[in-house]
Length: 332
Image (cartoon, rainbow, N blue to C red; front, top):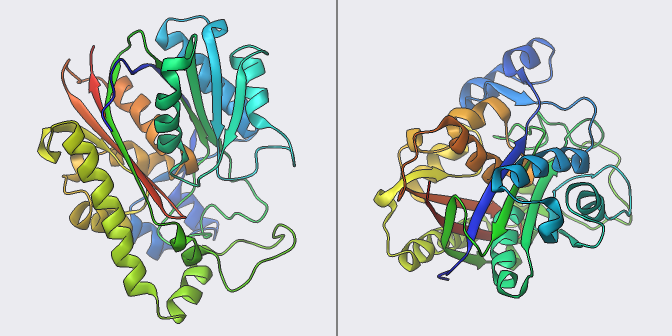
């Protein structure tokens, strides 16, 4: 989809300090084999704030970066893939009350790790009817409980952090040029496991075991093909609508997975050199759940080097399966 008069006016992030993967190996939390294969150097770990509090910190920076007043925010979308601090509680309302205004419309979104970019696309459709700006935040903290940041998913180290963007129709540092979402919803079975449960797990979540179960059903080859088709179609359509090719992208932001998965993605799905991606700082923080794309965009802005007219491709993917791709153009 092509967009007009749609801008990312401000970006913000809250990322706590990282613990090195070598120290995790020394403590027996992470295997040396995984550390060498995946290339993660650290994982950001929050010791105090719950995800919505981290989101408020990131949102404050995004609002300041946009040069607006928080009272000008009309809608707040908040997202995460894991526990937000209280059971059966509207985290988005907390973010709105503390980072926008009590009267802002606030909604929690959920679509696993693709929810940041799919939420951005949803927000863009609403923007023409909004009297103000839209704030989108993501935040996750993988601290204890059923999620083991080092072992829950093979090829992934989970990091804590929050990202935020302000969407505006009146201008900003990035123009949203195009987006495209592809869905293959029947692939939710890939990570479902053998059975449903009546209450949340109290034991360590093992995504690998769910994959293994699905492989045992004999459907992996077909599922992998459909996943490849979904990602390549999403990326291809977003680039086509932007009248661009992958080689025109100055930077590419992809999910922060380990090298065992990332190398395959950059060969089969998104043909771009790893040095043009967010890997150089993602490897220090880990996979931030819903936040890789927003935090990645903030980090690319912070490190500088972008020139007006430069284009950035953002790609998100989430179990379910959905993939959203977005092309932004830097305005300076």
